[in-house]
Image 1: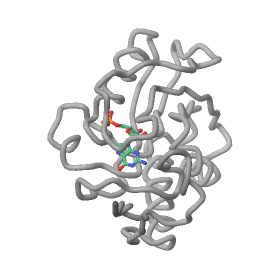
Image 2: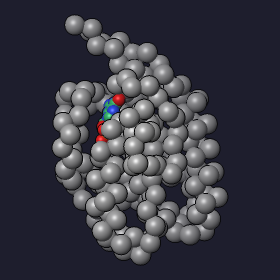
Image 3: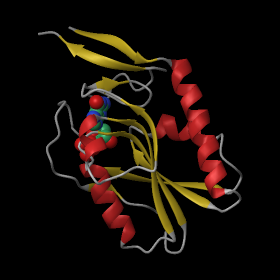
Length: 174
Ligand code: 5GP
């Protein structure tokens, strides 16, 4: 049996997304920006965020290896689906759902950095303590959360719970 404990409400998320969108808009102004959404977990955050950004916003997707059906990282990061477009000379903003160890983001930053974007920044909705301590920095962070396994608002456990409008800690009783 599994139970859910709400950590961040739908309303708190919506307010935070608006705040992040205001900060991003203020920083980029009318400059065209390419959002690079990291599948699958960031797709709901991306959709809400993107609708609050200006008309010069485009999007593309990458997918990295995930935790599979477990709740702990394998430490191996692989690109499962690459971008469709070239990012050379473009302003790129990576859209992440959550930073845990920061390993996925570090790898992605390094990879995309070699493709010579004009700028490369990161927005993440959630960040766990481990990632907060590392050098892999995100320029825009929604919420600092405790080191617990969370689901909802795009985040899954074995592909379930992505459609919850809030973020919750998943308690798994055996
Ligand atoms: P990192 O490389 O930073 O350790 O992990 C990043 C990825 O691990 C996220 O994009 C997400 O797919 C997955 N992840 C990390 N923590 C959680 C969590 O608490 N819940 C879920 N559902 N996925 C997580």
